[in-house]
Length: 405
Image 1: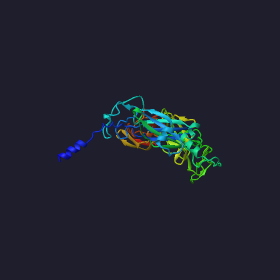
Image 2: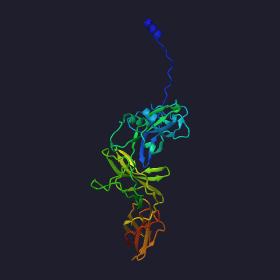
Image 3: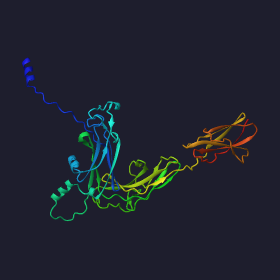
Image 4: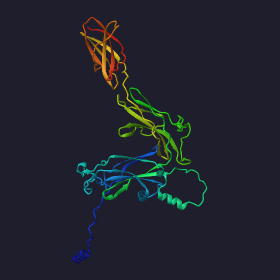
């Protein structure tokens, strides 16, 4: 037994120490690319963890690449032959080797340094589609040249449009890259025409945005068919390829850019925004959306339309006013109004027959009840009206008469 052990120890060979495992960032999440007119809007979530789940991420920037050509190209070819269309600097840990496991609290993570975006933040980029961006990338052009016959008949427009593919990748310190994000392919067709500038109206409940569809966009009818002329497909007709649809996205213009209000494109040429705040200006644009094989392409935006709603809408008349006589008093009660901006009620009183009713409460009272202390023997006429916070007075309620005991 000892001999076997001795042989085992003698035959064992200790190799050189293994290098530490280099952590690389996880793929950028929520990667999205949307064609808007002649631009492609790109966004993603900055990695906040490494590919093994530890935090914080060893990432100092996120690069976005674009490639015009077949979607079957490998990741390495995208990096070698594609175009880096943007780079987002990211706050990185002081020591990337000091990390915490996924189930540990955030306060134990290494502090981040730098002037870039926070890890986990939403990053936005865009690429303008120049003629050069629409040309097939060099590796694809070489393949076509080698395979092209000496002479070939005219084949017409392709049945499906060419794609420009986008991908994002996190770059660790010392240039190591992490896994790539999912790929997004954007069809290289002319964008749809824009609708008219929005017309805006509002009431006490919501802002209504309406617009006129572009002449070349088809409007869906109630029976599901289309009316009007077909959409302009410009330089790359779809032919027998993926079907297209036409709808609209509504955006609010904010200090941070455009904020989309439609969860999904709407087919009708109107939209209601119930985020009504009196005195707060809101600006809107509408973009036409065509969907090619499941990928949306938006038009350029027409000029923005703005509105600053002013409350000129009076509250409704209070209902079911009743009067009950008491000892030296008359008690009034009515149904409360339901307006959200209600300031209160003004009680009106006059001596019967009530040809003139004067305000009994100098300022609006909040409760839907009131007790009038009066002497017995005089018959009074009462009514109530509601007032909102903008000072708008509503119509008068029903009239009641009563005499205190």
